[in-house]
Length: 437
Image (cartoon, rainbow, N blue to C red; front, side, top):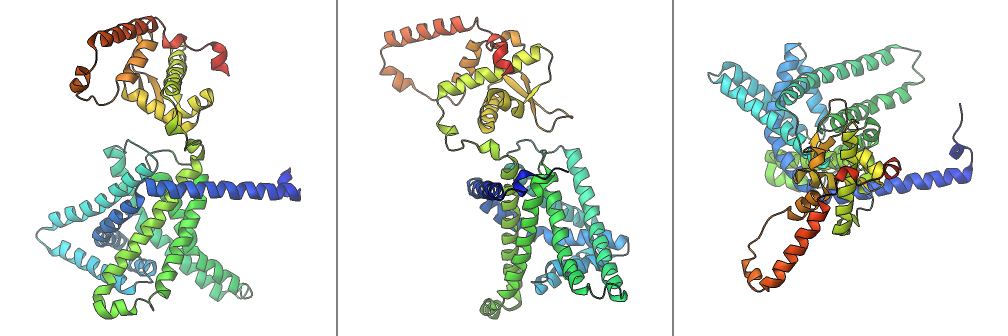
C-alpha cells in the first residue's frame, strides 16, 4: 500500500496540518456566520418550547411501545440516564408519562387523548424537519407519504434502539465482571464502556444530520460534526451538574418548581448545539457553494445576465441533443462560476419561467430543463423576462416629470434592440468549444 507523501515528509506534514486547520477554521467560521444569519438562535428557542410541550407525550409513546415488548422499565431508565443532570425533571417526565398512559387507557375520550399526543409529537418532528431544511436551503419538504413512513419508523426504532443498547451495555459489563481474562484490562474496558453513550449519541446525530433534511447529505461530512455535537452534549451535562452549586440560590427561591425552567434552559442549549453542528455539517459539505460569498452580491447585472444566458444555452443545447438534464453542480463545472452564483441564477430562471426544476429519482440533486420548446427561447425573451421580473410600483408621478418624446424614443430604441435579439436563439449562443471546455 502506498503511503501518502504528507506522512513521510515532515515539511509536507506540517503543510498538510496547516491546510487542514485552515480549512477547519474556515468551515467553523462560516458555520457561525450562517448560524446567526439564518436566525437559528430563534429557531432553537422555538424548538425548545415545542420540545417541552411534546416531551411527555413523546416519552409516553416510547414507553407504550416498549411495554408492548415487555421492556418499558428500560426506556424509563434510559430517560433517567439522559437527564442524569436533572433527576427532578426526569422524575416528573416519567411520572407524567405514566399518568398520561393510565388516563388514556381508562378515559372515555381515549381517542381525543391519542390525537393530542400524536399532534404534539408530530408537530415537534415536523418543526425539526423544517429547521433542518432551512439550514440546507431546501425549499420542498417531504411528501405526506414519506413523512408518515419516517415518523412511524422513528416511533418504533427509538425504543427498540434503547432496549438493544441497554442490553449490550449490561451484557458487556456482566461478561467483564465474570471473566478473569479481562481482569488486567478492566480500567481500559471501563473507560470504553463509559464512551458507549458518546458513541451511541454520535451515531444518532449522524442519522439525524443525514436523514432529516430533504436532500442528499454525505455521511463522511456528518461524522465529525456529529462527534463534536455528542462531545458538547456530554460537556453540557457535566457543566450543568457542576453548575448546581451556583444555582442553589435559584433552587432556594423556586423550590421544586426550579426543575422546569432549568430543564427548559438545558433543552434550549441542547438545541443550540444540535443546530450549530447541523450547520457545520452543511458548511463542511458545501464549502465551495460559499466561494466568493463576500462578492457574489456585488456582481454586476450585465455579468448576471451573461451567466444566465450561458446557463440557459448549455441546458437548451444539451436538451436538444437528448442528453440528461443538467444539475447545478454540472453547470458549475461547465461555467467555472461559484456554485452559489450558479444556484441563485437557476432559481431566478425558474422563477421567470425560462427553466423548470425537476426531481429525478436517480439524482441526488434537482435537475433543470427548458420550461418551453427551446426553439421559442431567444435572447430577447430571456432578457425581457429577467428585466421585468419583480414587483411593479406606481411610477405615474415620476413619469409625469419626464419628457414624453424622449421616453417614446427610448422605448423605440429598446424595441428595436430586442427585435434584433429575438433572432438569436439561446441554444445557438455557445460554440462547441465553449461547451467542451
